[in-house]
Length: 250
Image (cartoon, rainbow, N blue to C red; front, side):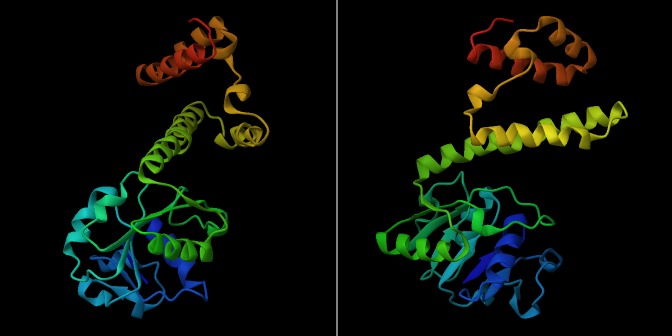
């Protein structure tokens, strides 16, 4: 099998595949040589799509908007082509006879190692035969393999943006605020970890705490006075959303 891409996900796929004795990685492609610095084996590096040969499975681990563009440039058409996007439908690869989706539901950063065995892999394919093939392959790297169709995967991807990307942005705001006030961000980490660990026993709705759900107007106004105009909008929007869900009034 081969990988097209050199971003965060591609680097993790490479490290996972190369250390699995049951997987034979043939090539990993990037147009720019410098982007494959994480690949230790020079013979695996490729900068020409023509060098990909005829691998059994080709993973398109590229940006969502680049999937169709890259697929159209491929001269090989008889392989099993798989994209790794949560937001793209299966049919974006319909020009290939055999196509599917291999979507690892996780956040990836190049310098942060992750154990793939614990990552949910959402798969979909255009035939039962290809689905089984993808399921067998995914089971080599993860203990959590799920059949998820395009519609549900898009919904899952949106949910993931809320729990991961938006949440991390709030962490960034909090980190900057701490820095501006001479407070170490690390002091918040036990709170952050407890917030997540509570979800093992409570639904998010029941785990909600804070001044918004208490309708603590004095504290809310004090917080608002401490924020710049942009962060006031975020604070007010989230407070209103919490209170609407829990039946409180501003």
